Image (tube, rainbow, N blue to C red; front, side, top):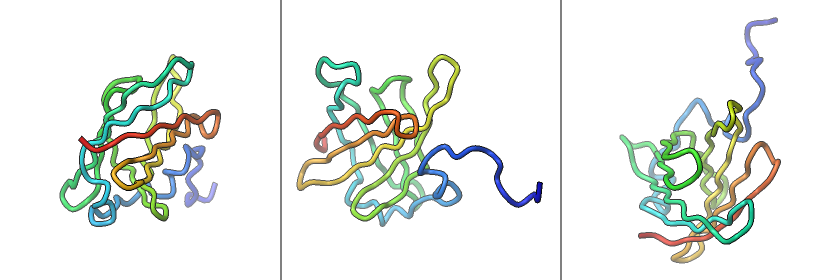
Amino acid sequence: EDGIRDRSPSRGLGDVYKRQMLDASEASAFMGTWVIAMENPRGGGTRDQTVVIRDEGGKAAARIEGGRGGALDITDIAKDGDSLMLSFERSRRGRAFPIVLTLTLDGEMINASQDIGGGRFTVSGAGKKQ
């Protein structure tokens, strides 16, 4: 071992951005409280998820509520072109799995795509600002 490389396995796209938080000015168009109707991965309609994106000391921060696993604060936020990417982990039955929520503005609406488990499956949804 050379002591330089991080030997831990990658947890998804967020690893690239883990060491620095996104400047709030880069996420200004996304700031606010969004209610997004995400498709239910087991079928049968949608489930509302509230995503709050805020300026926290000049850096972008977010909170997700209404999803499985309860409310979660997120600081691993990156900009990819016109999209905002929120990376976090959820645990289920003792196993942690990475999730990347990609948000894209579409006029007054927001489109969401949630990559779960490093590509195991994806759910999508759309919503609007409260």
